[in-house]
Amino acid sequence: MNLILLGPPGAGKGTQSKLLSERFNIPQISTGDILRENVRDNTPLGQKAKDYMDRGVLVPDELVVKMVSERLNENDCSLGFILDGFPRNIEQAMALEETLEQDAKRIDHVIGIEVETEELIKRLSGRRVCKRCGAAYHVTFNPPSKEGLCDSCSGELYQRDDDKEETIVERLRVYDEQTLPLVEFYKERGLFRKIDGAGGVEDITSLIVGVIGK
Ligand code: ADP
Ligand code: ADP
Ligand code: ZN
Image 1 (cartoon, rainbow, N blue to C red):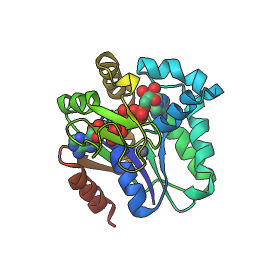
Image 2: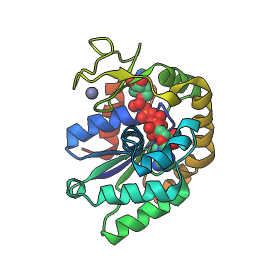
Image 3: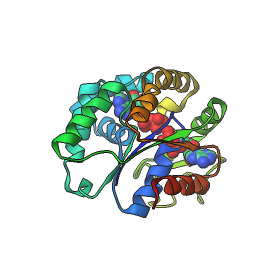
């Protein structure tokens, strides 16, 4: 099963992708996580991407598209994958179609998680992320059992640089301008499934599982 999780920053794409990845035993491909690893390791890709990420704007398509096509070619994607944070604009969506076509693959469902702006800002400002495995926590909505430490790998939790207020506002603007048009794009292809992302983490997982029919 090949899935795309679509939604604004803070909607819960990362949280849900991780849970679905464990449940269906298919990899989560988070372009944000891969880019942050590259920035941390100071790779050539990381050096090119860092400034865009700090500003809350999209990293250029050619860098991200190449990164995702390479990842999709790895063996663990043969039985399915969950794209989290990609595609982010129409150009990326068209590039993805092309990559998948070459492999005789296609997307089965695009899960659009909808959450209102005020709630997104609360979620993003309280988010803490595991340095080691990328798992997301929230200081009040989803705190770890031991403060500052990841429940699943004991990694250290930190606050992302782009989770400060000015950058959050810019990221939400970029989402409306560049990513939201993908809703129509995937509706036209009959793939779009809307999910109300306002409830608790487990309720939303159940909604998604219901929609994809497993
Ligand atoms: P969030 O989960 O909060 O929406 P991400 O971790 O997905 O944020 O993305 C963080 C940053 O990484 C983005 O603001 C952008 O700079 C970059 N990024 C991630 N995915 C993409 C993508 N598909 N295309 C371009 N830039 C991306
Ligand atoms: P995205 O990947 O879409 O940016 P995340 O999965 O990182 O979103 O979640 C953003 C923040 O909101 C995190 O702090 C996470 O713990 C929290 N969160 C995720 N899902 C929910 C939910 N259903 N209710 C409340 N908080 C949530
Ligand atoms: Zn961890």
